[in-house]
Image 1 (cartoon, one colour):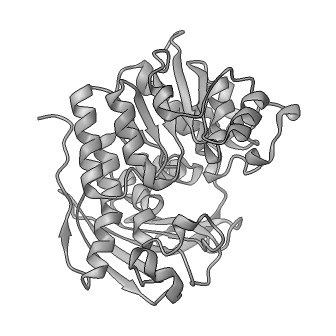
Image 2 (cartoon, one colour; image 1 turned 90 degrees about the horizontal axis):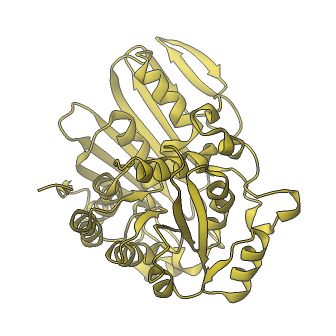
Length: 371
């Protein structure tokens, strides 16, 4: 990768601020600009991290010829429009999940990538978490044997979050459980069938017209004998926060811990064993390895409440940054690229459609990046 530098602009400085020091320390990135509508927050974070270029207007940022790539961390309803605008303006795009909120928006992003030749990556955290990297290593080393079945869940109580979350269909934010099952098998989803269960509070239903407390989807993998089951809940379901996946192999099976911070379990045949998941910082450039386990801020004198979430997400943040930056430097496709991101995202969108239609089987659209 030598000394090539990519000028990065981060858009949205809530969750997005966590990535600033990672880009600042990455040997092939230049943390060039930040964008936030709120002037006070923009300058507070810009001052904390000594970032000179600051924008309150996204369109103005896109007109800056020095910006090579944008990393979008705005509310989910803005992702598609902002991604397409950036691609049309000649910028590479990294975008937090989900890619979009409709199948048509996903198609438009894939088409924009195809037409511009630029790079798009959905920044799905779970597929770069230490848990996923651990299971991936077991599988690629042959320790799991043949994959037989995959299961994942993402259960979270969203009461008190910003208003646009209220009543959101559970599967509309399903990438954290869809991503790992497809990524481990290196497969695309071919079709889905999903059932809704239970009922959320009446005042939550009206916003999106979605009544279900839980949605559970079966995914058939394309060109494979595998299928997976993913479960998602957002409101009125008693459960500790959990992003999890289980992988059933012919030789060994990995099952995610039921209680946060307790060990996961590996079954060898019928013999269970608790396992401590190692960190995978060694896969990263030395300059950003500390960000898999340490707080995501520049130095002791630059701490800010916005950054206290810490490394979170299984230590995935520096892995995501490295995948995106190295893909740009080496002129290769990142994982997941636009087509793969669309397939992952559309599983959730169409799963909710299936649930609203009594579990109807729905085929995934066939997105392609080449004709």
